[in-house]
Image (cartoon, rainbow, N blue to C red; front, side, top):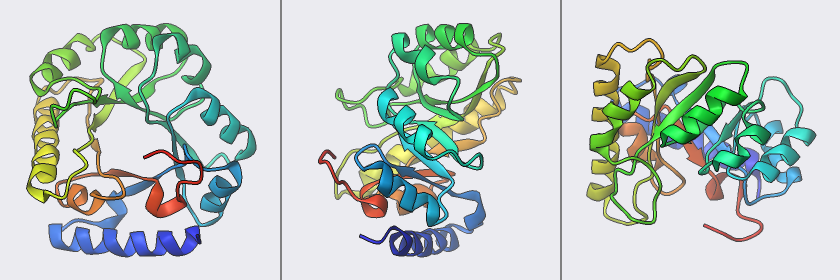
Amino acid sequence: MNVRENLRQINEQINEACKRAGRNPDDVSVVAVTKYVSIERAQEAKEAGILHFGENRDQGLLEKQASITDESINWHFIGSLQTRKVKSVIQTIDYLHSLDRISLANEIEKRVDHTVRCFVQVNTSLEESKHGLQSEDVIPFVKQLADFKKIEIAGLMTMAPFTDDHTVIRNCFKTLKNLQKEVKHLNQVNAPCQHLSMGMSNDFEIAIEEGATFVRIGSSLVGNETGGA
């Protein structure tokens, strides 16, 4: 698998999706999901020009950070973060994609010495297997965070169901876009909510058409060396 060639193809798809939506491709960033691949494959992604890397385990994150030391890299923690593991990763990441409870926010506020850019995770698909807030709980949750000094609500994040029904997928992304507008209308200082993290290998073009600014791509970019979804 050639990561550079995969990225070229993905960028072509991003350009086409942006053209359909009347958007600027420069407003969409690819997060390489490297949780299932080796450090060597992640290094190949960096050499191909990837600037955003996503991990969902503290150990995997720290191992790759130790090997890929380029300061231009942005590190994203994209998995559910246990409160007891906040201390080990929160100082080393640029974005957290899974803020979904006040206990986690409290731990972040206690553990960091800088502002952490967070995505509030929303379960727009209503699947029991997925983490995240229900849509109706997002605005109250964001308001609860108004006085937090070290948390910036950079945006919202969701995962659509793994299905061939594009209408179902699109509705999940539309829901998140509408919630983003509601958050922005709060004019809350620590909640600019400029970004939408949505779309993966199987549905990122639909996500871009609906407003995604970060797409999280694993298997079609870097592969899936060790199994997993």
